Length: 446
Image (cartoon, rainbow, N blue to C red; front, side, top):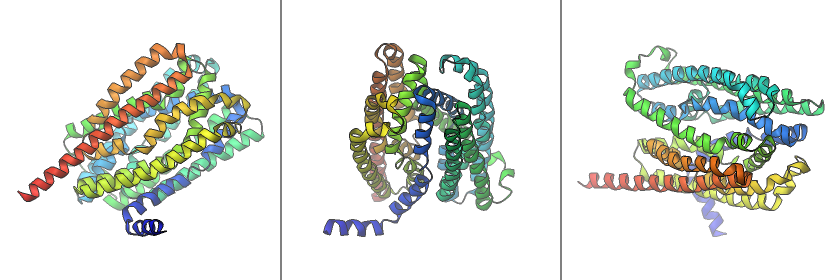
């Protein structure tokens, strides 16, 4: 009883943790329909069709992220720092440069997707006629031409509720179209359209609210600010390049599982993988918003060199993510096959790869703050190098062994990548905090 009372008292006093959890709750509440969408899509298309829709959506998202330079992270780092210091011209110049870079890369990504669509339809979906669906879904890239920049602005400005509203509207629209397709016995075209419309709402909605926030924070003429107010171009480029490379490695190693499996095995195994990852999303869903809400707070505390707050926040969010991940993992181990029955009996073979994927993805879930910490500390090259070497090893083994050993081996490789690389990054980040805290203490006493 005393323990629970102490816990409640501590919660009431910890305003920063309340803020992080509250903002995460906004984002989480907007994703309540994603599981329903997944189940109805699986039941409508079957396991093969589910694998094909997975390759179509991941294909476009891959090229969009490949050239996006993770502008949300750059914006949180520099826009957040300059607005904290009331250096609004420097903040305006950063945003202007980010918008130009992201919109240009979006156009390039779309062109590449159009050119590669016939090849993707043949090699990934094993069906040349699906090329039109690859092209159709690729239009989301144009609709999300400044989504990452706008998202970074909303994160820094603490507008998570607005983000949640946009995501909620997106999921509602997608779910309604999927339900309509399910009731009218639609097919792949209707499902692709449903997901595409949802992405359009996210892209355009985020851009509109992002511009509104910029006008409020920086003034309506912020876009006229000269680039001479930018930080050193080399510094910005190194940050953007390193975060994009890190993102690319993680994307190729982690987020492209469905594409790798479709390429080396078949749309059937890709369907099992997509189903397994969709079920695991139940574990990740409550924690994913913490990434967006924790990063700006860590960056703010690092900017102020308040190491006590940094360590306290990391410890508390790890306890939250660890507690949830352990409980939900046990739940999936016990009831995973029952959940798969909602998709259909043909989806049951996804249970074994789901458990294997869950080892690494659960570990990533617990220590979700590993990269944001090093980015806030101004060490973007560290996670890049660690992810690079671990990623090379994982992809090499994928080429060599997955065609022979199959889906289960690919799932084990992914989990090994997460456990090794994240442990390495976490240790490096904690060491850096200790060293800087020690140096600040020595400077204060000198």
